[in-house]
Image (cartoon, rainbow, N blue to C red; front, side, top):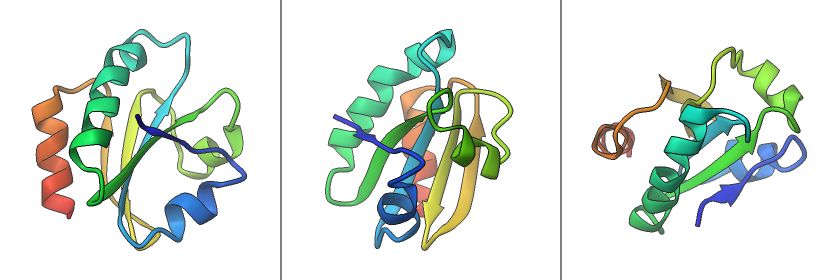
Length: 105
């Protein structure tokens, strides 16, 4: 199961993490976001212990979405040592996402 990130826990859970973090910026009403949800959950299991994988709802956490310039959803950010190291916009296959995670690890 993927983690839930919020404006209030983003600093601690994502920016201060000692492992790579995949953040899925999504909204409940977004069709492509709903398509990505099971993939995000599968990756959370696959990468347990190697990376943190979670989601942040842009409707409820607008400050973080705004801070990272999220204009389209889903937007997936790979954050390592508090810095964005990769960005994917739109729905992508699991294998593509896994490859990007492996490259960033």
